[in-house]
Length: 176
Image (cartoon, rainbow, N blue to C red):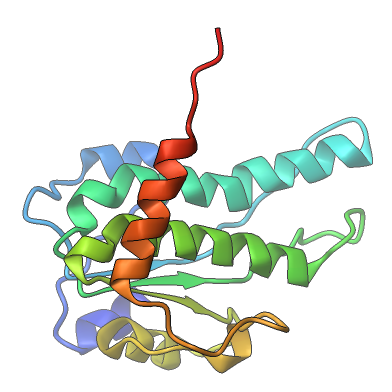
C-alpha cells in the first residue's frame, strides 16, 4: 500500500502500533489517512475470551488509534477505513456483518468529529485491491461493496454530523 501511495506522489508515513505512531512527527498533519486492518492473534482460555481479545486488539484497537490521530486529521482530505479484520482461525466464529457494522460506527463517529473540517471518511471493503484503496484515499467516494444492508442511501451533511456530535457529547454524564 505504501508503495502505491508513493507512486501517486504522496509522502508516506507508516505505523504498525502505538509506539511507532508516537515516534512519528505528525505536527504538519496528514493529507490522507488509510487505516488498514491488523493481524490479531486472539488469546484466552475460552471462546468468549478469544473473541473479546480479537475485538479489543483488532476492531476496538482501531477506535483507539483513530482517537489518538484526530488532532492531526483536522486538515486531512480523506480518511479511509479498510475492513478485513477476520479472526484468522477457524476456532473463532466470524460475523463479517457485525465487524463491518462496528467499522461503520467508527466511520460515523469520525465523520461527526471531523465534520467542521470537511474531511471525507469512507469505509472500504478489504477485498479491494491496493490500487482501488489508493483511489478512495486520493479521491474519496463511497464503496458500495462495504455498505450495510438497509443502510440509508442519502448523504448525511456535515451539519447533521456536527449536530449528532453535540447531542452525543451532551449525553455523557458522570456517575458518582
